[in-house]
Length: 456
Image 1 (cartoon, rainbow, N blue to C red):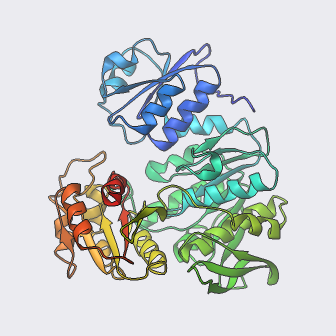
Image 2 (image 1 turned 120 degrees about the vertical axis):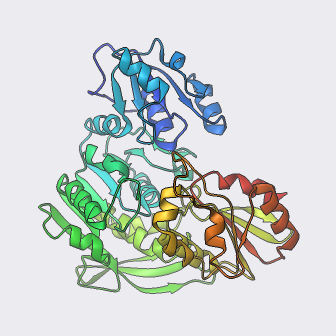
């Protein structure tokens, strides 16, 4: 196992405190730091499986934020979602304890590696990061991986410390975090309006993506995405394009069909010539593009394309991305992380093909700002679902200054329902779903807790 070096920590740092430690990325960074012999502690608002897993490693996790938690630590790492007046941050600043944001901390970690592959885009980052990692690992390489979601291929976790062969990471655009990273290869999946609490225009997002792309030697970008290609028109890095049904692109998926299970089978051409045949077992046409991007990354890194395609046939996806949770009384239960209108439409479209009867979508919007800023788009996102039920908005880091509720969306969609509690939703679905129906719980908040109520 390669020892991680970190040149952003002060010399003689013996302990680091992580504010928001139970997030996917933060828990991974905390675990990596702990594995390298540094005392690690942290805090979060909710106790749960992640907190228990960290404690089992010997990491102290406090529930709730208090200045007392930080005393005795040499440095503090915090996420972009932590407010400036967080009591732990305030204490650290007042006592001259170095405070490092998560993006800068991760950016420093990756500098120990050559061949850094960073996956960015408004949607699909975790899936494609998982796909690329799976291709590399199946090819016998041992990369270090830091993903934004847990995967089966990483032993149920979101990170892996490898021996060499590069650093594969998810590059989040929120608050321009990805501008703290140092990719050799920047994989750009898509670009559209999101994170309206930070980005105030599509042009602002394009400018950020151009800056990220210019940090890389090579950019692998979806040529089907007009916004993305517009952002890259003045990019100074080498650009390799991928996409579907357009053989002017460097890597092109074509002859796309469905097998008897509702999954996609297709071919990929490189520079207009057939390269490999692909069969995937994750649902949705969006995963044709995701797979093509991952195979392109493998190919330019010397991995045989057909071998990469073969590994994609065993890729099971990442947690909470069209994740099968079980079956109860003939009703199939899935869980999905989609929380943007485009993601919702793609996920519902893919799951619809796996559904024998009615498709139920139980959706929990994520943040008031996104719900208000993309309200009309959300109202138009659920057309392929047969039954739609809304839970209340998950506030995350926000206060409802918009005066908005999930009920406002439900009232705009014919036949949609709104319930205040998960218990009410579960009671209604359990009483009305029929054998052959498919129920998906959807959103980036805590809606994933519902599947246990449904499986009962």
